[in-house]
Each structure stands twice: as structure tokens, then as C-alpha cells.
Length: 503
Image (tube, rainbow, N blue to C red; front, side, top):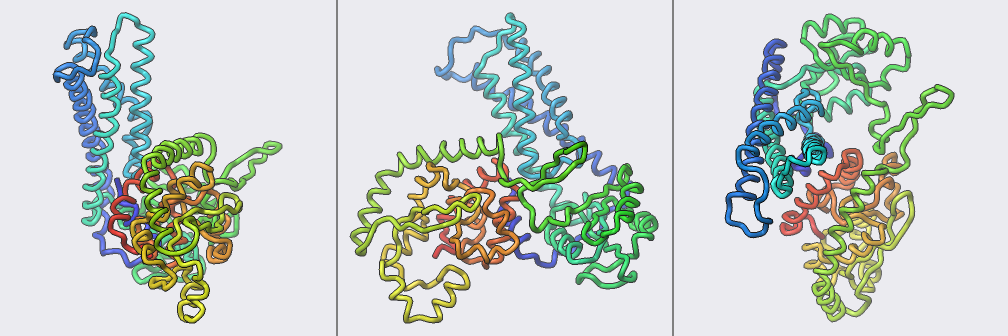
């Protein structure tokens, strides 16, 4: 999977992108995508076939005694069945858009699509087996085929995406793009696209009504002309993507003209930012009132199935985790009590979902007279007020640095997860006093529960600036998926063992 830490660092701390070769000519770009999709189809074909073959090997050929006696059809039946099933898999993949250029190279979204498509294909076989009683299929073989197809196809697409990312540095798989509007929103869009070197968009410049052609907008980009010149600019630069910074044009006529001209074009994709991209991360909903479509902002980021899946993941990990870690928790509690006088558990008042406050539980890592210790250090008081963290904190107990470095002090928060106050993965939990640090982002922060771990945990923890922490939280909220949660949980293990930024 893509490394979340590298992705969010590009967002949180934009740097000048490495110089990329110019995009290839239009005909070459069209040919490369046809070859890529054909290659993807062949890789899927081979890996799906491999999944069926390995499942057959495990179920019928290895001397394992965990399965029931073989009473199913002979080998030639499965050979014919695999040929039919492979076709079904590929048809479902195609119907789901897994060979559509605009749905490829999407990271966790693509993996999720592979999972749903493979599941749909298996269910189709199950339904056929139910309707045709004479067709007996070994259930273990079918389940293993499903699991292996998800894993192998997902891995194949991971490798293919890495190849495309390398080729993009040489000018392949790049789509020339122009941004309409050189205002603050347009500049923000350009910086993010330039920092995200794997996006596949090569921004060649801006169109703006107020600035003459040739006006520098960023270090590497300038205005190419006005909107009235857009036809000539698209032809000259072979533009494929027109990105409209909607806040740059308040006149409805300008927007309508652009959509009438390019909204249904086969060769140019017209995309419009919301104008509220930096504020709204929870998603929008459209509802008709008296046949008038009105847009509303979702009050929470996760609803329905998403919320249920995240809750299931939380309980599936937190409950067994508490049972297995209970001896360690007891040992740590005794150690904390013997290390310094005071309670074992520290209760920190933090903000929860929709502004509900709760006490986050942690093993105490500070002396109970911490304020008294800090009173003689005005420099540290200023640092604490600024960052809400101290790198060299004199209030820590002897055991405190070790507990923090290995994140052992956060283990009691598993109880917060079971009480549905927190989640395993989520934004950083913050105190009520920190809300002002989030400024316009605060309306989005409290739309998901805070997490024990999250993007900040795998991205440097306390070594990153506060503004970067805010950007990381917004990245998580905007891009949430169950696959992202699983990926972050997996990446948390080496991050904790390294102990980078833990203080």
C-alpha cells in the first residue's frame, strides 16, 4: 500500500516538486493508457488464475487433514469452473470500473474496489451453486480463492502503480492541466498538485481575467492568458484537465460558458473545486425541497455502513487487546505507583465527537506537582503554551519517558474505545483550549472520534509542527476509509518501535 506518512508530509509541508519531464504528446498518451490497461488486464488474469490454482493445491493436493473428505467433482470439473469463474471475475472488474482510466491508481479506493468486486464475483458463484443443486463446489476452495484473489490482485495493482509512479518522472502517464483562477484558492490547488508528484497532473499554468499573460504566479508557473483564450491554450498545450477555482469567478455567466464548452467534452475533463475545499471535509449531501436541489454539510464524517465497519474494527481489536494486555497493564500500574507518589491513571479532559468532552485515560507519566515544577521555567511555559508539548519536560517521572516512547501510557485508552468515546484510529485528541489552534478547521475536527493512533503517529509524532498536525488530521478526515485505518494500524507498529518524536 502507499505510505501514508510520505503522502501527508507532502500535503502538510509542500516543497518544490522534483523537475518532471514534460508530458508526452497526445497520441503517445492515449497509446500508453491503452497498453497499461491491457497489461493490467493480463496481470489480473494471471493472478486470478493463480489464486484458483493455489486454492486447489491447498484444498485437494496437500496432505492436510483439516478439510472434510473430498466428495466434490473431479479435477476437470474445477478446470472448467475456473475458466468460467475467471471470466466472471474480469467482467465484474470491468463493470466496476477497474479498467477505467479515471478509477485507476487511486490507492486505498482501488483496493476497496478490488475487494468489493471479488466479493461480488464469489457471491455470483454461490447463487449459481444454490440454484443448481447438482453442482457441488468445495466451500473451502471457494473461500480460499476469494481471499487469495483479493490479496494477489491487490498486490499486482500495487506493483503496477509503483511502475507508473516511476514512469511519471520520465514524462509518461502525465496529463497536462491548467488552473482557471490565479487567486488564493487557485494558488493553493497548484501548490498541492505540484507537491503531490504522483498525482499524474502536470500543471502548465493559470488562466486569469485580471492578470496579463506571462505574470508569474508561483516559482515555476505563470498565467497563460485569460479565459477567452482557453481554446487556443488547450490546443497549444494539448490540455486534458481544466481545473476551475470556483471562488475566482463570482459571475454565473463565466461558469456556464465553461461548462457548456467543456462540460461534456470527450478530450477535456472539466473539474471544479468547491471553493470550500480547505474548510469542508465531512462531505456534502444534496436534497430536493419542492424540486429545488439544496446542498447541506454532513454533521459527521462517517454514517451508516462506514460507521458500523469502523465500530466493528474498534471492538474486534480493543476487546481482545485488553484481555491479552491485562497482565502487562497490571504490571505497569504497579510500576507507576512504585515510581512516584500519586494516582496510576491520569485523566485528561479532551474534545470528543460533536464537541462532547470526556476524560481520556492514560498511565500517569508526570509528577503530581508538575505545575509547581514548571513555575520556575518561564521559557518552558511559553513552549508549552505554543506547542502543547515539551521536548525536555522536567515534570516527567523516571518511568515516564519509557512509557511515552513505547506509547505504553496510552494502553488504558482501549477502555475509551470500548466506551465509544475514542477510536483505534483517528485525529489527535486535543484539549478544549487547543480548539482555537484549528481555526476554520475546528468544524471538521469533531466530526470523527479522536484516535489512539493516526496519521500523526506514523508521520513524526511530536517532531512535526502544530500546523502540520492540523493538516494531517484534515487529511485523515477527508480521506477516511477502512483500508486507511488498517494501513495506519499496521504502520503504527514500526513507528512505535522507532519511538521517533515520542515525548
